[in-house]
Structures are given as C-alpha cells and as structure tokens.
Image 1: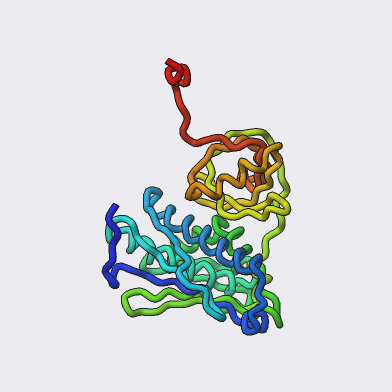
Image 2: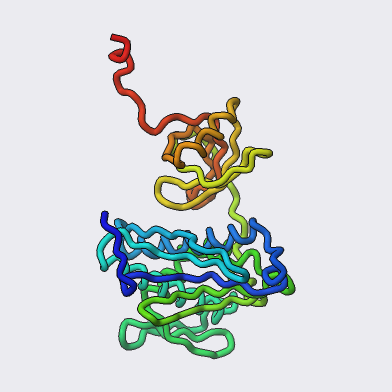
Length: 282
C-alpha cells in the first residue's frame, strides 16, 4: 500500500512524562514500556471499534529527555487518518470521564442534544461527552490499557503523563497526574484457564537471562511470554530473521473474560511450511 506523506495527513502523538525520574534520566525501561504498551493497546482497540479493517502503525521515532514521541504513519486512504484522529478524541474523552468520576459511579447520565451525554459526578459537577465515548467507558473496553498506561505514576518519581496529539497544526492533549492514578486502577484478573494451543505471533523483546519477553498476537495486542521449551536457541533465532511471524505451541493463560494474559512457549515452528515434504526427495 502506498504511504501517505502529506504533512496534513500525518499526526504526531507525544507521550510526555514529568517528574524527578524523568528529569534525572533514571526512568526505568519497564515503566516506559508500560506507558507505551498501555497507550498503543487502547488506541488500536478504539481504531478497530470504528473500522475493524483499519491499519494503523505506531512507530517510536524519538526518545527525548522528558518525553517519548510516537508518529502515526497511515498505510491506507485519508479515511484511515480521520479514524485515527477520531480514536484519539475518544481516548481523550474517556480519560476525562475517569478523572471526572473519581472512581465512583455517576449520579446522573442524561442524553442531550447532538448525540451527547450529560454526566453528573459525586460532587454535582457536570460534563458533556459524546455517546460513543460514553459507551466505551461504560463497557470498560480499554480499562486494562489505561491501568497499564498509568501504572508507573508515583508522586516524586513520575508525577504525570500527558497524551498529546499534533495534527494539521492543531494540538490537543489530556494529562493524568499521579494523584489521579487511583481512578484508573483495575483489580488483577484471576487466570481462569490454562491450556495448550497453537498461535501465530511475532516476538518483540527478549531478556536472555530469563527467556522472558513480550510478543505480538496475530490480532494486535502485546502480551508477556516465557520460553519453557528445551531449545532456547530457537527463540534467539527468532530475533535474527526480521522479526517474522512464527507459529508457537504454547500454554495460553486466559482471564475470566477469555483475554490472553500470558504465554508459556513450548516450541517454535516456522509460520510457512512445506505441504508436500516428500516431493523434495524426488
């Protein structure tokens, strides 16, 4: 597909962290990965809510002191870019709602003109939000992602994270302070099933000392994995072949909502294989 290079068709998203750990350059890789993964997963889910076929790639293009810059490169029509902008506005509204609700249920949710919802919180303060964002907020579709995005927030270390988008010379942003972290916390889901399956994955990271890392599932999200097989050399080879998709035999651990939480990999297989191996011997 042809890449769209016009500046008017590009958006740049900034994840801006603030606090002593950031200023001193001591922010951990684990915290940075948590912020990036939380944002990316929430963003992709929102894009696919609008169009399950939309293809949006998030590339980290710069790591600066105090911030991480992510550029969105659309690989389809201008329509996809509009969906990307829509998804950010949805994310912005959902963050606003969580901060406004303060971890409590709304006292009133009243439909108003323009397909919007009027929300009254426990302090009798009212905000107006779009109905689509409200429905996503109510069904909790990105709750786990926002939990991961805000998990590193801690007063005196990482004081805040700001999600900011610059598009068509306009800027929009939403900031979450460490004091607001409690509004995004989710209880840990219990693993309710664990069984052997065959999945298509792409490896993203690896710590050789533990054979742990993160990988992409075929439908987009990243999950942690542990290599539990007998030949870890097969795992290491996976990082020398342009990170191709591979098939893995693994123990899949799912929560009560049937969401994959982690994988124990038993064996790594080529994604493409010869359907007629005997013919090679003729």
